[in-house]
Image (tube, rainbow, N blue to C red):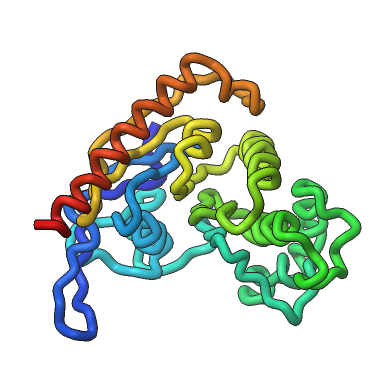
Length: 262
């Protein structure tokens, strides 16, 4: 099987306003295959969100290539959709019109009206089509953001800490919901998170990033059966994965502190 996301020797360098050079990502390579659920974990500032922007085409690498479905990424495309942690819903639009934003921008609103309704049912928002964002809970806003992404019918979902803004209980519910949606749709999911538990619980693979400049330093296959329920977090194998990822993060964070102290 050919990967539908290929990152080959990616580096990104930029200059700050005061002229300081920042090496955000260096020599990063990874392959992500159709239908996978891959999480990326690393210390703060390692370039996880930057990587999402590179894959979506919002940023261009300084060196290296980003390829999606054997085509070099030159900008955003309907085959990819991003879900952000702050929901990014338009407050003046109701839920249905938020979900239809992508098709509307492409002049295809009519063809996607039924798709939008079907997607809202899938994420559990049937009956909330005419509500505005201020009338929704945090979890419901994130469901609407996921519905908006899915309505565009992308092959790939790029998710940048999508559950960071919801409470702990809702976060666990949303994790189960996203697994269900992923299995129902067969999308490729690339998921950025600071949460070790979230990454292990949801993913088929976890990619571990180094401290800045970020690069992939280990790939961890999560061999836990689906469908997964919260009870899997009590299994010995789960604790082994968690300990392994925690040791990685701890070492990388120490590197950051040691560099700053020297």
